[in-house]
Image 1: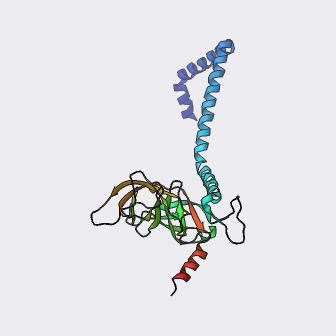
Image 2 (image 1 turned 90 degrees about the vertical axis):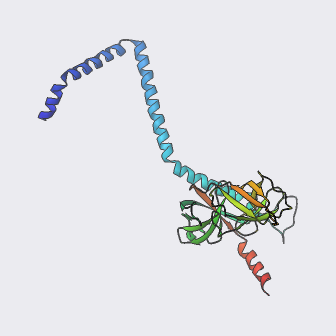
Image 3 (image 1 turned 180 degrees about the vertical axis):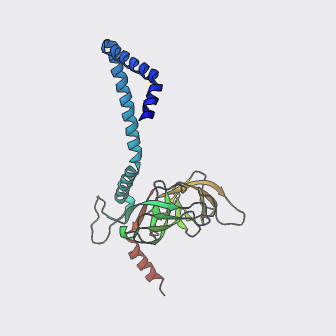
Length: 276
């Protein structure tokens, strides 16, 4: 306490100056309407600025929840989109209206871990078997395909990234519908190759590549990327196509796990046809 009194005594001149300044300001603004109005205006502006900063901070801290809700809404939209349904035949009578049954179901998940700079890259999602995720399900992002589910635990899933030579995805040119396989052999996280498209097919830089569908992994028409280069090696019957991927695999975000509801029925029929 003695040190406090010594400190106050040492700065007594400064305290007296501040006190007189405060008294003079009070007398000035209380006796002059113009200065009083300016003071109120300035205080309102200061308070408004503080509230704006607070709102920006609270909005930033709530971005995680906002992103989660948007991802769930997008999943709902994908579940209602036309490419998630297939026409119904059989006992139904076809009229001018479109009768469809759902073929694909979408589950929202978040990438909790991922790699993009290794020879074989993987992702880990925060959804597993408890959420209905199982092996061989396609994973897509906001802009394009991401990978295929490999293993699942009750709460997590391991995904083989499209940046891995372990998977070859069936794709096609959006315009001509000539199809081939997406195969990552570029060692570049931004690009991949499309193989097995015959030379007679017209492919040009800037053409869009999309999923072909029918493999039980991805619905048809999901954007894969844009053709960046097309080369024709002598002696080869196929184009050498490099595609710039539409999905940025170097970032972590919300993704959508796609469940083909007809995959088991189709696989059973195909296996029966393959038996001797």
